[in-house]
Length: 500
Image (cartoon, rainbow, N blue to C red; front, side, top):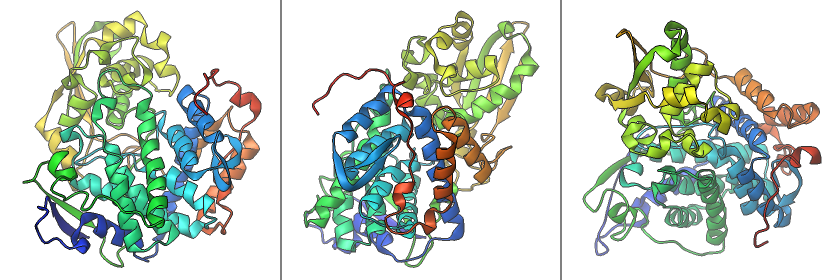
């Protein structure tokens, strides 16, 4: 990896284009290096993972609306949309599939200086690859780039510190990945990256207070913007430049300011893109920083016995967990029994309470209104708080994969005065956890979430295509989707009419 110093540059300062961060990323995207076997295998796992979550979310209102929008834009050759036959304009297919894989907060994650769900790269890159008639090798190369670029940016540049949403790293990564898949030149990819970043910077209010369905739509929009940015760049249109380093650019006015320096490490020429191997998926449908607390609650519940004897619970955890999904957010909505699903899955207090009571977690039942409003749940929920612990914050930011952790220490005080303490550093499904996810677990997750949605024969067909993803021939990438019956689609709520 080669580390690049990135800072604001005055307009009058000599700053050649080949020193711009966007150009450095474009060089990574256009490097003809092959993808390693381990990276390619993990990419297949994540294609399966995305499809699993899309199946589970298929008839939810936000997903159904996004799909209806895409279906209003049929196109040939076009791209596929989860659940339905036909092909559609690639930017709209990226949009619909992006919402489907993001709606339940249930696919892969990477946390460092910033947050990310790098599986969000798959819908736009796959959509373009299908539309362009590419083969599996091109798709795998494009996805390796998308994951690499987003994760490298996430390691180096904090967006949330300045209340900018994390999809500002996704727009550039998806544009870079599309550029790799299509075999575009460095100049074209450079322009597409600049456009994609310029158009995907938004505030973090979408993950604050009363959280709405836009949480699922935001990364889908970034993917759609990336597709459109590549299209414009291929037609010769340019972008704001230098987008990160400019005197009125992203760093100067949206991030750390004109005096801030960032150190971004990217693969050098000929260096394998392996960043996907540092990311991890979810066993539970909830914000990633609550994965280990769910497993911890399941482990502690037998020691507690009668949960009505709990006087208070304090979860000692990292700064990020405390302020994003804990009481450090100062969001009263995180204790509201009538809050939206999106709000509840960003309340570790709610999640820990339900996991303690149920000993399990389910992507629908655990969020059902009648579940959230149970009086005994509300009583326990409001006894839970979080506290920042510097050691957990240090481990969150550690660059040592054996130390990096997103867990918590639970201190449960009973009415008798007895205090029960336990901690868990990483979720059970984490690569260092008690039950790390491998191919069998990804397939089992797909089978579980697709049950009752995708017919068994269609499940088998999709999985067979996914296993062979790297070897699919040009024009065969349309196999990397699934369809369902009209009876399944009829389960979706009745949707109001939009503009088209």
